[in-house]
Length: 111
Image 1 (cartoon, rainbow, N blue to C red):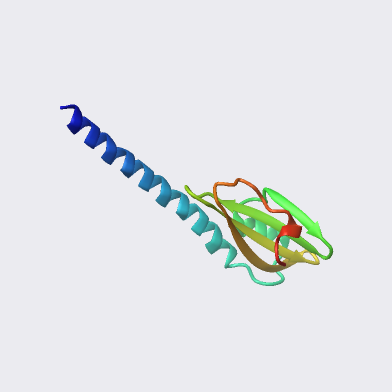
Image 2: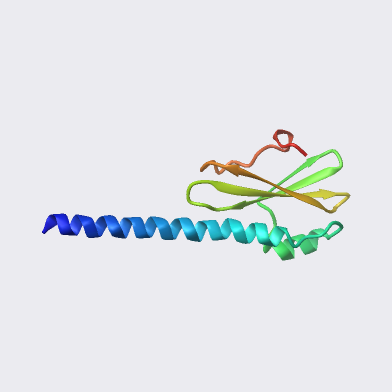
């Protein structure tokens, strides 16, 4: 009797873990899909509108400004960096962090 209950519990846990993984990956994927619609020269207002909110972290280095967005995933986090030059969209780069919840310093990134 207990063995059957444990087997059912294992299946339930695997199902829940898989659902969490798929849902969180969709969050990171949605973020990337949004970022790919940006075009050089887009305004800050357009970027906020497309991405759905202001970035959690911004950094400035010389003539560049970097807006960092984090897409949640169960095992790793995907970070999307929206680069601005002269206050306008310039390009997008990404990096992954293994359950880090840590935004990289701009000087750590290869611009």
